[in-house]
Image (tube, rainbow, N blue to C red; front, side):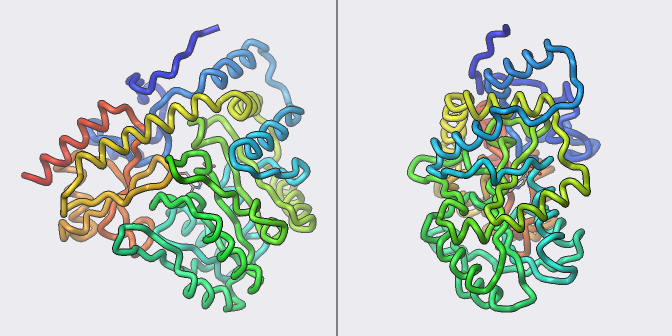
Length: 393
Ligand SMILES: Cc1ncc(COP(=O)(O)O)c(C=O)c1O
């Protein structure tokens, strides 16, 4: 068996496969020399136990139809119990192809056309696309940025929007892409109470659950208590935690029996419930044995964060919004006084950064950019040198 090490400094050419992060589709035709930090995956090889499990599965050589492996749901449940103190019932787990698919199905099943889904921007841009493509209405409750550089939920705004009977669902991003908040128990409880009182169903996208920094711990929304569990749908996935987005599937956890049956029927109608042999092998190995790798990866990312913090300290033209989790940084470039196109062009042509423009995350994201720091230290350091030079030039 190959002896894989944890080597987060290894430069691996992602162009050997059609990786989106470095693909012309994302970088443009002339983007080869850019710091590719837009797409939300890591430049690190997956955990050794995952690679070994996939090799074993490959050697078996037969890839006919498969059921869910007996050990998969218990592995997921044990992971969330051990890491996050959430004892989820394996009977509540449904397989899904990916998290966004679960969001789309939830929207189409449990809201009607034209109804509102509450989102809290700046937030993952695909939320808006899913809502629009399902002919629902994105109703925004913008996060509030305090003078301390910390984003908070606007509970008064939420109360008002939730009280409107046309708004039937809320997409929660926990931890929050792109601002890096790891929502605290009391914040989630407050949100949960408002939503229950007004009959707004919470769809919790918890794909970033496992990547949190010292002093912050993830609380699964459905772990708050039975009432919130029954008024929510949790979307979980090993994609971000173990860098296996292209070879895994995801999980929808639904405690309410009626909604679970409806979801299952919809999965069946759409025939999205087939199993992928490599995904099964990768996911079970990740949840059983990927912990040490994940801890080391988070430590490496935290050191990358420290590098950014040190390099940008004291600057007025760019400020780091201190993240509590995720490998995505939210940088405030409003001090440059550029409009959206001006900032995009500055970052691309002067700093040679291919990042995600803040305005894509909602109106209050204008003037910001989202940067993925799950890359080698050397690459990040060179990119920071270029940014600082561009800012000074
Ligand atoms: C908050 C959030 N949800 C969902 C996704 C995508 O998940 P999936 O690939 O499982 O659809 C991402 C990827 O960046 C994300 O950041």
